[in-house]
Image 1: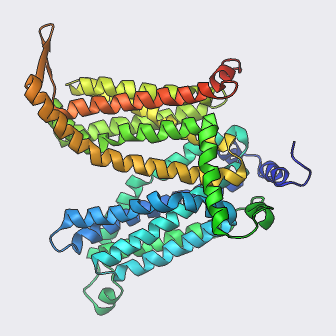
Image 2: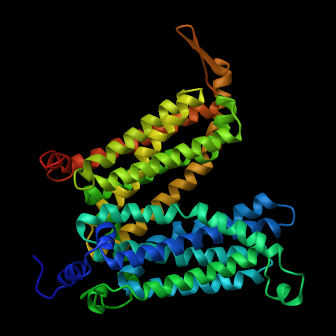
Length: 475
């Protein structure tokens, strides 16, 4: 029971106040979250558009080393997460989150307005580094705010909408990039056009900068109960001392270690990403070597994955009140791993496509359910650190997956060739065993193990969250 007038009371009052009737309330939970979601849609479109334009610019100014240039720019987008993301969570927890988001949006807009005039790879790398730091501050601040403006019973739907906003805007951004490229071709070769860099990338950067200013304008109009300075800094550590910052970092990681639900989500998502991330560099190779297909077949597999994820997210949203998230989360991981194992074992497209759709159907809710569990089980004062820590783990695991998968595939290919000649016969049936298939099996096993580890974490918790789930209605 919180004390009268406490931050928890004010936050609950804010959620209660943000419940107007009508369609917006029934879908989004509150007008304030609807505004935040619109801001996310604009911001995500800008993020994808900016990434496309940055990669295009890196390729243009690379001076013959396109692959290296693009890799360096992408590394600049990933590297800050390893060293600064958890510290960013501490900053978010100790500052006013609305001001953090406004600062980051305006900062990203200024960087993109400057990018048309960058003509060196070093400048592009530095700009990418700054953009990633600002994004690292913006993301945990946004995640920490969601439970303050969404009723608890709508959190699963809110996270489903967040997933749609984050990843559904990529094709939209790609379409905008194509339109801007066509538009730039129509400009006459005049002085003012060259001065202001109204070329393909320049137009994309300008539009991107405007998108972040629009996001800032929307964020500025969102209202929620904001914590006092004393609540942000804490009564015992009311200053920005270095020891206090390290103490808060330690508290965040200790909370992850001792809280079974938070630990399960971190283990499940991070470990599962290693397995799932291996598909990125291996998918096209699998289609070429195992299925003997073409590029269109790989696109069909990607379509099946995306469609399955969309349906999975929709089902998780519709049945959010009838499922127990602590039980479904590890089971979804196991189903995704099992589906990938079957898909990796098949050699014909008519089996691979539906099984990849099953993988997507199970994988879609994993992100939604995981983030909802964190929203429901992490106190407001720790939320920024917990989400930042999760982002660190996920980024690290993605990098591991992208780096290890091609190497592991080649090693297993050589091993399979030397031991079995890349083929074994079981019961008169010849089974082709290239390295890419073996690596996909490894990926599937990792995802299943991630589900098992998450389930173990939940069973190991005090009172066993899974045991409690069995007694809940609708479980």
